[in-house]
Length: 161
Ligand code: ZN
Image (cartoon, rainbow, N blue to C red; front, side, top):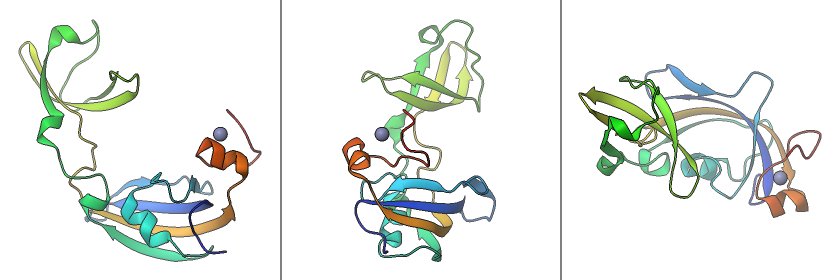
C-alpha cells in the first residue's frame, strides 16, 4: 500500500547536515514508526514520503523552512544565574532541559556564561540547517482506530503506555 494520511509508516533513516557527518539515525533493525499526516516528522520529509511504498529508498534534501525552521533570534536569552537550580552545572556547550509555562519539557543550549548571566539558546539544534535524509521505507500499514484516537503509532506488541 502507498503512504497516505493515517498510515503507520516504518522508516530507517540517516540524517546529515550537508557535510556527510551523520547527526541522527534510526537504530539498526529498529525503524522509526510514525503516524503519517500529522507532522510527527519534519514536513519536508513527510511530503516526499507521501505515495511511497515499502522498499522505497530515497534521498531527500529539506530546506530549513520545511525542517526545523529558521533560527529565531528571540530564542536566545540572557538569564541570571540565580534563576537556575542550585548545583546545576552551567557551562558553554551543555544541553539542559527546563519546564515551560505549559508544563512541557524544553531543551536549551548554554551558549555562554558571563559572570552572573547565562546566555541560553532555545532554538532547535537543527534550526537554520538544510537537512539531508537518506530514508528506506520498511513498512506501511493502516493505523488502527486506537492509534488514530491517540494520535500516534503503537509499537509491535501493541499498547505500552
Ligand atoms: Zn497510544
